[in-house]
Image (cartoon, helix red, strand yellow):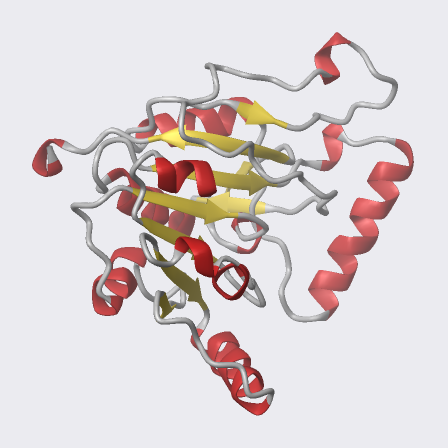
Length: 241
């Protein structure tokens, strides 16, 4: 994010922010960067109560944007929070897509695609059981069970080619991927995939932790995924050019 800010990005949107502490750790960037924490309203209320209880003040450059992705569009939430669609933005969408339906993911990508050209997103997504093996598959299944028991089951998964197609359908210009598709013993197919060079101004995407397999459907058609980090530069739609 430091490199992105130096390249002219003035807004940082953290989707599914949870207990993210970026704005509290990087005061040195907040004089030129507005940080928007986007999360479920209930989660943000809990976080803000905890911060108040601990005597932690919110930095001046931090904006809370409560959004229920399944009932409200990202654009609506950002507009209400004072986000400027005319300025460059970096989106961080890590550890979130597995909880969303395909329709909600598509709606979020559509909002990103409507941002100023050159805006970018780092995202992660989860892989289906078919591309897992051995201990990895066992651990993934265990995490899926835990998430379901907590009332937050994983509902979306994609293969890299499917995520590529989904992103391109929403105006994405580039798709470098970092991470491994796990298929058992290492082979040439396990090497990190890059569909284009890393765009300038980017920090390397965050390391992906193993995430459980999930199931997603739209019109009763399953969507499969691979755990990965992906960097994208979006071009604006005709109406935003």
